[in-house]
Image (cartoon, rainbow, N blue to C red; front, top):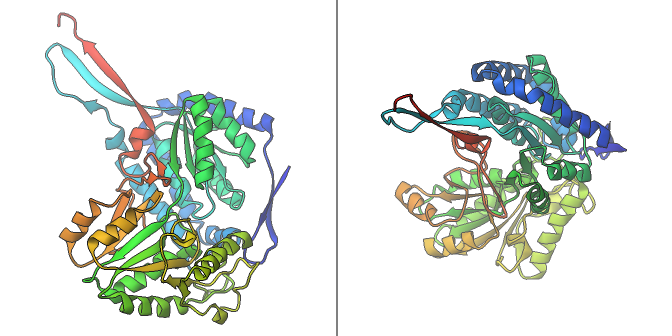
Length: 462
């Protein structure tokens, strides 16, 4: 079976690849199992050396990789190279902390005994990566899993198949032993068969809520672990004491960067009544200045969404909200590319919205946002928590103590103050509710990529 990648830039077939069949899947699993003992015995310092070399090779190909990102999923070429920089930051940080994070855990002295806890690799980690940040999401799982001594099998999105191939190339060139890292272009049914087989000991999946639930059901049959990053409807709260121009600039970027196709992108904003009018006016002016056009042009700041159906879904949310009483404040007629049936969608700002509207409850994954006026911190917290999702939330204020106090009450995986839509590799990346389960990044990620093994050794005569 042939898999075709349709570029959202111009609607043409950009990549064609043959999907793996059951025989190729079995061969890959067998190769990973054969490679596992040797890789597990490889000293962590050697693993770090090889993986750092692969990062060097990846960064050296920045221009080529950026261009491929643009053509595969539509991100403007002026922004695409940033993904390579983010990949490098996360990979190098996880390698830097690996020796301490993977070291034996000392539990204190006890006369006549030697006691410690060792972190052992799980075995095969099956990574299922998405298209929206094709390298950033992949590196979160692949580099920590490999340095922890696991083997890795990668299934990348059908929208971004070249990303899997580029990762294979740099890891092979860096000198990883055969079978330690592999990729397959796979249909969903065969991917779920791998999960059900139990031969992978952890599945790291980033994608839709429905996809995550399907993976979790399959993993439950095999009694294996999962790490799921699914989705978000991430809120922001602009307090009365916020720096309004700064909040406007960053929240528009948080809602519109990557055409809004970010799990932690801003999708709903609550603004204190004292600064509401100024914020809304600034938001509309800033978003209206975006340049929606061919993402291969250097002046383009907003490219197409991944496919026309995704843009039409978000247009439907906007249309439904307006029919229910919301007002759309951005005149989309000035964006010539924006039309029904096109992947190119203009930014939009909706006011007079309520939580009864789809646009405030469903994940949009688009450059649209609903803005609500609130009277107090308490009202803002209640609305921010009124969601099935809980990936990130941001508070815009000059008061650190207030941000911490309010943040304690928000049900979220990451709480930001005066920033949004960013992953710090030193902090655990996790979610609440339908945003997922498990942890990636930070030293805590290594706890999920290894199993503890206790050594309780009684000395002779002890």
